[in-house]
Length: 178
Image 1 (tube, rainbow, N blue to C red):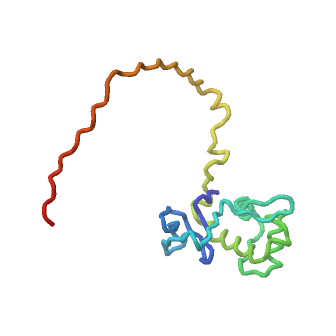
Image 2: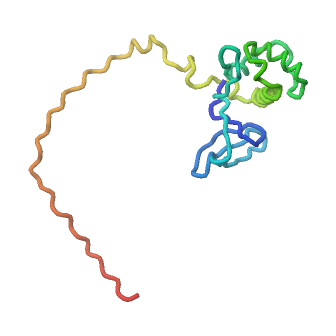
Image 3: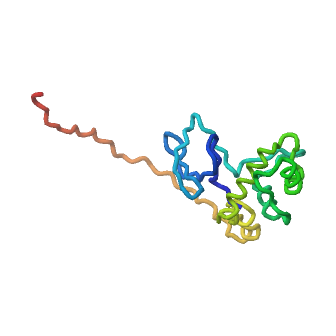
C-alpha cells in the first residue's frame, strides 16, 4: 500500500495529495472528484502524512498502513463509519487486536474507516510502497556485483608559473544630465 504523499489537513475534511511546496506553504490537491487545489499555510495548518500515522497500542504503536491492510483482508463485513461505538470497537478488536482501548476513541475509528472507504478504490491503495522488501535489491544481487577498483593515486600537479593579469576595467559611457 503506497500512502506516500497522502496527507490529512487539520480543519479540512477529506484527504489530499502533496504536490509541492512554495514559500507560502504546501500545495495540495484534493483526492475527491473536485480535485480542489489549496495552499496549506505552514504557520497555522497541521499536516499529517498517512504513512507516518500510528495508532496507540498496548505494547507498541500500530502503523496505520498495517491496520488498513488488515481491514482490506478481513472476511467480516466492514461496518459503516457512522455506526455506533460498540460496533466499531468489536470490529477494531478484530483488525487491530493490540490497540489500546482506552486511548483509541470511537471518533478515531470512524476517521480510519472513512479513510479506508475513500482509499480502497484508488490505484495507490493496491500498489507497493516504495522502499519495501519487494523494491529492495536482494542480497545475492549485491554479492554478484563487481567490486569497485581501488582508486588510483593522483599525481600532484606542480603549480603553474602563470600569474593572473589584473582585471580590465570596463569602460562605461557616463550618463549626462538628469
